[in-house]
Each structure stands twice: as structure tokens, then as C-alpha cells.
Amino acid sequence: MKHNTVKVKERYNWPVTILLIIGIVVVILLPLYMALMIAIKDPSDMNNILAFPKKIRLQNFADAWVMTDFPRKFFNTAFITVINLIFTLITNSFAAYAITRNRKKSKFFSLMYYYFISAMFIPFQVIMLPLVVQANTFHLDNIFGITFLYIIFGLPMNTFLYTGAVKAIPEALDEAAMIDGANPIQIFSRIIFPVLKPTTATVAILSFMWTWNDFTMPLVLLSDESQQTLQLAQYVFKKQFSVDYNLAFASYLLVLLPVLIVYIFCQKWIMNGVVAGAVK
Image (cartoon, rainbow, N blue to C red; front, side, top):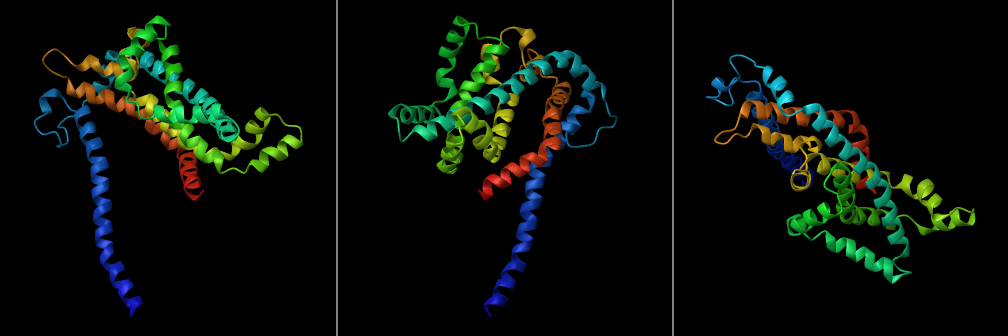
């Protein structure tokens, strides 16, 4: 009797599941469809945004490429993102390892842990103006300075993620390596860091998406137009009394394209990291 009841419930759950999947697909794909339709339309063909254009205008992408100075802005954004990603994964993971292994032995490391965690609750808008003043004073208002700041601002969240993962690794591994003559750096690089692959994948994804898509920090720090990022370049389509939506959406798709390419080529590692982290 119970077995039949379960089968009936499963049969009734299928339509609900299908409807939810359809709803999620529509919510995700509809904005992309609208962006694509606007990007390939002529300004005179904007009466119905959802309708397919009467004539596809690919010139919008070429105009957006030139107006945003796409190659230079792409290089600036990629430089900031890649350098931030490399140093974030190395420094933040090692800092979390040092804090986790020494929290019980030293009050200093315990205070450092709570100091980093408390920083997660401070909105960026609160420190934005003081940050601008300090960045100008120490000449950090450039792509090198903003890269350094991304590493620092990502430290609280990344420390929180890494410390949880390091805590799950038995300290017996460290002790065995020390008996074999390994120093703390060798222990971390050869034993601990490889075990942290799932967490590293998570941190890498979050850091990449945050740095690539961030608008606020480049806006307040990068005053030199030659060092601005792709996100700031979108301002060029806003005129005094109007916005050139066709060129703007063409530019948005150009900015989105590198993220899609990275995901397509790295989805194997992304999914493995997420699944491994969930199982662990």
C-alpha cells in the first residue's frame, strides 16, 4: 500500500518538476534572447523588442568594438582578473592554512581569524570614500593598485572558505611530513594545497566572476581612461538625453563572451570542484 502511494506521489510530482524546469529555463534564457535581439537590430526596428529583426545588423558589434576601445579595455580587465586570481589562490589559501593550524596555539592567529571574518560584514560603500583618499595617497589608483586591492578585499571570504576545508584535513598529515623533514611551506605546497582542489575551484570561480564583473571599484579608482575596464567602457553609450541601446547591448554581449568561453573550456574542472566539495 505504501509502495503504491509513493508511486502516485512520484507521478504527480513529474508535472510540477517539468513546469519548474521550464520556468527556470525561461528566466535564464529570456534576458539573453532579449539582449541578442536588441544587439542585432537597427534603431528603427525597436518597436517590438522580442520580435526577430527584419534585417540583422552585425555592424552594431563592430561599432561597439571601436567605441569602447575593446582590445585595450579587454587587456586591462583580463590583466586585473588573471593576476588577482593567481595571487589570491596562493596567498589566501596559505594564510588560511597558517591561521587554522595555529588558532589553538596562539591568540594572535585566533584574533586574525575573527578580524578577517568581521571584515565580511562591512559594506564596500562604507569604506569607499576613505579608500579613494588612501589609494590616491599611496598611488594605488591604477590597474596594479586595484589588483592588489582585489586580493586584499577577497581575503575575508576566501579565508572563511579555506579555513573550513583545512580544518577537515587531519593534522597527522602535517606531523608525518615534518618527521620526514618537510618545512611548513613544503607541507602546504605538496600536501595541503593539492587536497584543497574543491575549495580552490570554488574560490577561483567566485574571484573570477567578482573581478571580471565588478563596476564600483574601477569606477572610483581608475580615473585614467587608458587603464579603465570593460565595465566602465559601457558609459560611452549613454548620451545626455538618451542611450544607444543597440550598440550598448552589442557591447554587453562582447563583454559576456569571454566569460562564456572560460566556462565552456573549464566546465569540467568547475563541475568536478563543486561536486567534490559537496561530497566532502
